[in-house]
Length: 294
Image (cartoon, rainbow, N blue to C red; front, side, top):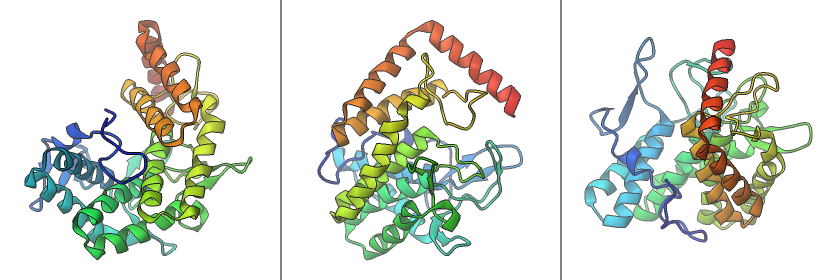
């Protein structure tokens, strides 16, 4: 899952391999853009997060094996991101999800996400370096701004009562601080720093990393990791997939920051996952949460 070839100090291959993302065998439109099948009332939809990740997986494959097909696919996804960046009600440029999505509360279309902004930036910055096409540069500059602006002003950042800044995957009335979404978005902030070299971007990254550092223990139940902090009563545990994702993301964040706490929790949560009793307990607790909330 972690890309052993990523570089800390320069844009290069993305931090996660995403080879499985690049091997998506579902639906595509005539331009080679993946469509996710949510079935039911939602059906086939463009998902900017999935599109960016498909592009990043193909970018990694091109960087490693120099296959033109992978380069073409990565560029096609970047082109879709350029064409589909739109302004929200506050005038900020975001990638919209044009379908309703049931979370803690139903997100009504169109809705946007800090995760989509971060993943889009990660792809566009790399494709710009690959091609030199100014359209990608202009787009990623606009896409970065919502990662610096409070949700009340149309951005994707919430500030809690202690002053910690969070990038929100889902913009809901009471911020839930989805962990995997925050971390993936944070990699986009880091990529923008590598791309621009601006000290103010590095300071923003450091402030977000400090939020994770100071609040990581809140995601630790003693036997598993939490998906988000949506409730202090019903624990919204991570699924097995997201628990493993948390471990990988924390290992990457450790390599980017040299902060031991991220490696400590990655190893701790890896140990949780290795125990059958923990896996069973996590599945049972997750099931109870869904029954009560959904």
